[in-house]
Structure formats: structure tokens, C-alpha cells
Length: 268
Image 1 (cartoon, rainbow, N blue to C red):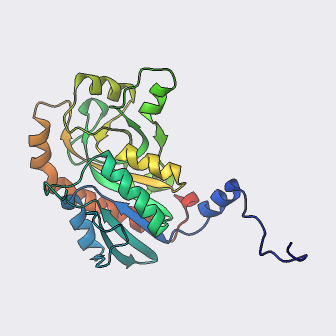
Image 2 (image 1 turned 90 degrees about the vertical axis):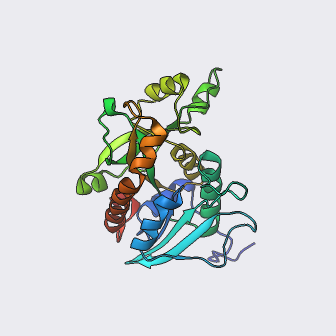
Image 3 (image 1 turned 30 degrees about the vertical axis):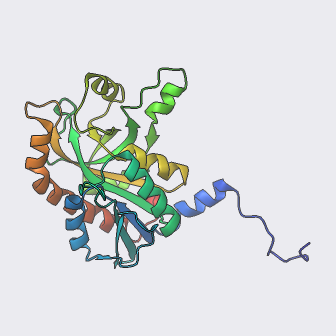
């Protein structure tokens, strides 16, 4: 038994108190998670990040960490890398969930930023090049038509509330729906409409799930590359607009990080 006044065996504060403390602590350690190399490299260059030669991740995984300091922030950008067999970007929910979990466990960030491109619905007000902050994330391709399991499949989760950031940077706010396919089946479309989503991507809700599970706030910055309810094939429009829209994403991420610098979560 510890002597009176000895705090060496004092229990940690309750989770609610820990969460409150983290909300009011200045943000100093940010992890940016980006699915594609084309999306990642402009941000790497803008913040003068360098690739970590000694990966903190398990041997054999293709995940890449870029790191550096910017103003008062330690910044890491995690890219899931290229598929070891096919050599394409490791897009989708599985890679994103894995790298998010590994990054949180290894780097202990104060905040996660998932930056990337997305499809948008013109019927919901999206246009090519628009940049959104995401308010809610859900899945549209996890259909489990059993009571309660259906809600688990949708997996609705809220991003960190950032009203000051949205107002200061004059960004649009939208709901995001996530699935593992670039195209959209009729069933997917029905689920996306049910999710009231303006945006569709292949990572966000998976990152939101892991971030909530491990109690790390997450901000989602999405730029529109293709109009889902437009008249052009999705893959063609996505590739046509990727470079130009990635440049807009890069600028938006810089503005977001400049706003975050010196603030705590509660001030976002």
C-alpha cells in the first residue's frame, strides 16, 4: 500500500475527465491520412515533409510515413502505399482502417485529418473543385437487413465539430458516405440517399470508425473530382479532374492546418 500522500498508485482520471483535458490542450501532433499518392505529394511538398527512412510500422507493409514540423505542430502524413502485387494505390476501407489504427497506436496524435478527393452530387449542391468539411460519415455498402445490425452496417459517426474553422475558412459542410467501389449500384444509391450524403468516397467512414474507437478527434477535408449524378462516366471524370482538384485540396489543407495551429480541439 502506498504511503499517505504517495500518488504513485493513484488511479488515472475518469475517461470523461481525460477527454475534457484533451479538448483543452493545445494541438501539437497531427496525423494526415491520405489514400492516394497523387493526393499526398502536393501536401508533402507544401509542408516540406520528408519520408521516414525507418518506418514505425510492421515490416513488409507498404505504408509510408512523411514527417516534419510546421509552426507549432508535429505533422505526419500517412499514405497506405502501393499494393505489393499490383502496384496501385492501396485505396479502400481496409487499408485506411489499418493505417489509421497503426498511426494512432504508434504516433499518438492529438488530431487526425483525413484529406482526399470524393464524388459529389449536384442535386445536393456539389460542383467540381468544391472543398467540404465533413459533419457525418456513414457506409452505404454494408447492408445487414436485421434489426440493430442494419444500424451497425450504416455505422453513422460524427466528425469533430469545428464551427469556428468552417466559419473562418468559409468552407461548405456536408455528409459523407463511404463504400469500397468507385462506381455506384442502384442499391448503393438508395443507401447514399438514405444517408443524406452530398459526398461519396472510399475511406472516410472507416477512418471515422477507428478514430472514434480509439478516442482521437478527426477532421475530414474532401474535394470533389466527379459529379456522381452527372452525365460523364465516373472513372473518366475522376481522372480528368484529379490533378486540378488535388491542387485545391492542397490549398485547403494548408488553410485548415494554419487555423489549427495554436488552438485546442475545443476552439475548432
